[in-house]
Image (cartoon, rainbow, N blue to C red):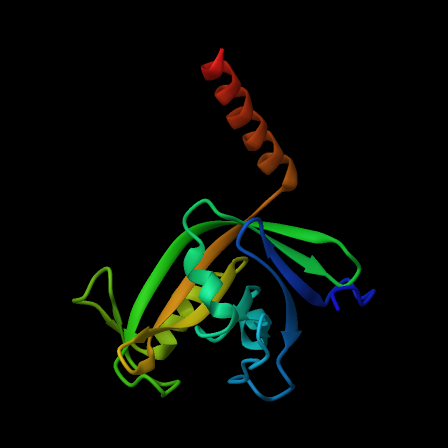
Length: 178
């Protein structure tokens, strides 16, 4: 159920051609909770302390859609009263967890293998940026479903700029056709 009448409650996530899923909240005091319900994303409460929005999903469930996103993808968040907020993906980050099942693991940046981060440093570099949307899931490798972590970082954009960019692309493609 996406409509709750609560303008503060995030209730859905939509990416055209990729996903249209409900968002559930973490139970109070359970920062490690991630829904096991298929086709459902969990809002990460701790991200709000940094004025960021975090969404979590298991990689074998709704998290599988996160890897379909790339720089420039537009993500729409839907709130309980029906209003929407738009984000553009600006970064895709992948890390190997040195202790895959520990929330205090150290992480190796797969794009820069010489860099190892603590869990606190990784949290600050993703959620701690403020005013961003972060989609997080695990990366499986072999028999280890929690081998690494995938972070999709997206920054807010307004609908007008999305519409204008789409119009320009459409106009440019029409000009090429004629």
